[in-house]
Amino acid sequence: AQSVTQLDSQVPVFEEAPVELRCNYSSSVSVYLFWYVQYPNQGLQLLLKYLSGSTLVKGINGFEAEFNKSQTSFHLRKPSVHISDTAEYFCAVTRRGGAQKLVFGQGTRLTINP
Amino acid sequence: ETGVTQSPTHLIKTRGQQVTLRCSSQSGHNTVSWYQQALGQGPQFIFQYYREEENGRGNFPPRFSGLQFPNYSSELNVNALELDDSALYLCASTIGLGDGYTFGSGTRLTVV
Image (tube, rainbow over the protein chains, first blue to last red):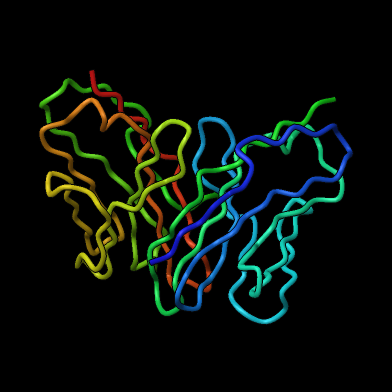
């Protein structure tokens, strides 16, 4: 079975500051990793995904994440945030091989202050 | 454009009633999953359908059931509603995991 731990439930940052949202996962098998963003009263939008290859993954809206197999982490970063980045961010994992269920973390609420 | 449409957007039901939630996936997305997201929580996997057959189920009781149709639409049915069933229900579809899942905007169910 897979599990995901998002280490921060809330992250407040000032506009134009860098941010890192932390995600650790647990799995006995190889996995795919995802970050989703959820704006208020909306569904989930895929930010980026790691399937294989380069451990640094670039996504939409200037976000990137780095897969670290030895530390079982997949932290999300952005060098300069905007007010519009205020949202809930979810890290998710699924086992490799076909279309498998996503296991989500509890989410991190990113709040951008002017 | 999400490509996944859910209806209705909001719904209020009374405890003990039954409810049907609907999802229309993108053409060609032969795998559809349903998730329950309680307030302040991450989504929890309910079940998944592939080519109209259930091929995975999370830790939900049998009163949660589903259907997938040949036209890429699907349904989530919940019988004997309980107060704890109040949540956002999300439908997600994919053509293959390399593409990731595309989520709908969800149905907000309130049980009173």
